[in-house]
Image (cartoon, rainbow, N blue to C red; front, side, top):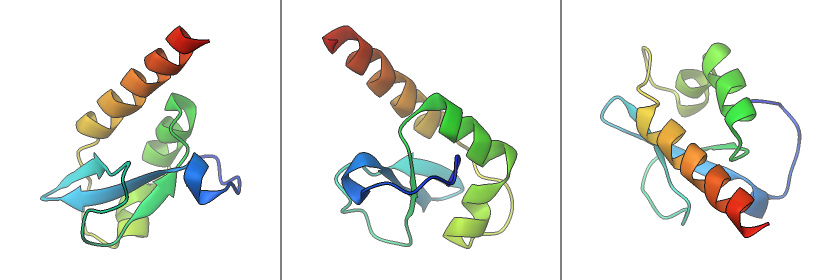
Length: 83
């Protein structure tokens, strides 16, 4: 969604909305419409800049992406620590 590159579903992070916020759904089990993005800060920034989340999730207005950004940053730091 952010970089618009195709990838295997297992490589992407599912995102859903809960009350006016984008929430990460790594297990893919939360109810509702989902959208997929690479779990990378660059892709997340591009999706936010393009206002892709409200369109993809079919919700009106801007969405809060703080929880999503925090999750992506934590997973990025964890991946770099394991390398």
